[in-house]
Length: 79
Image (cartoon, rainbow, N blue to C red; front, side):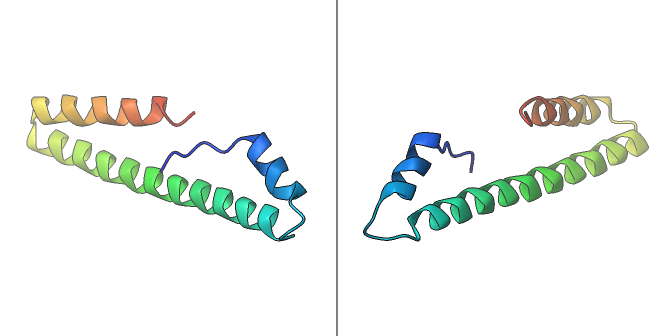
């Protein structure tokens, strides 16, 4: 899901005369990827928080530590 789009790719799409919609299609793809990435990250965070709450309720220290580490990893890659 984490794709890399360069400014050069965008300029190439913008400069093509064969199809004037290339730049718009590339931007649509970029925005769609960003949106889906955001939604996936938010759902994963919500799931991990629910797992953390459940581990706390059950007093399961191992599960709590596991989910906290996963959540920290998710948040540090959120860049």
